[in-house]
Length: 313
Image 1 (tube, rainbow, N blue to C red):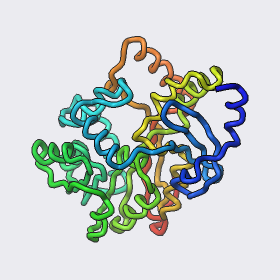
Image 2 (cartoon, rainbow, N blue to C red):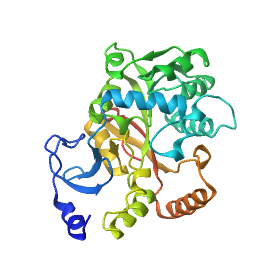
Image 3 (tube, rainbow, N blue to C red):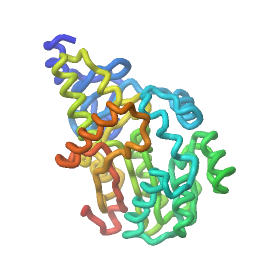
């Protein structure tokens, strides 16, 4: 890619069908051109999103491989999903879930909990131990089979939309690493809002687009005039269609009739990644910079209905 092409990319519009998944705007600029995807910035709501998107079938097949084999386009994630299978106190994922439940329980005592995208059921197993009544749904049959056989959970296979239509109400609804996969993120949040019990809370975790990873990889991309894309391809991956910042996540929640109760920036626990010694050192340095600058690579948010009288904090 030439310098002129990199400069011109700021004014390019996406494909006609690649409208912003949050606000529907067709006005966007090309942020990055990587091997298999284009990364756009919406010109109206500022959301960052990938195009083209994988088909629903391709996504289901990918998650089957990730859960059963750890196979994906990013070798560093090979061990990432392996931590979803065992409820043990030294499991870094269990430790993370305990912290998230601590935050939820500050604003909502244990009750009926729905985990959208429950996977193997590990989060629900941890929540059940703390007094929550667990419910879950996921489209990956291999993962939900483990939830039933290993954790003894009654979870559902399929899409949340059909489940939401049944009219059940929940005191907490969680979406851990779900919204970035959504083709209609506002519709998903609206459906979750509609099945909240009075005073209920929604928990969301997702990658933070405004992170040190984007800053560092983007600088390499621009310095190389768009020729070096592999650092960006560690962050912008095929199953993540959407990349939120604190501002764009708050905007999506607001469009769905939800308001932030709290929002925190977090860092990926490096114990869950498959890293060479050199890569581990590099990420520790980058994460130290992230802590100092507020550019952590993860977001954790709690939200309630706008009509519940809760604002941001």
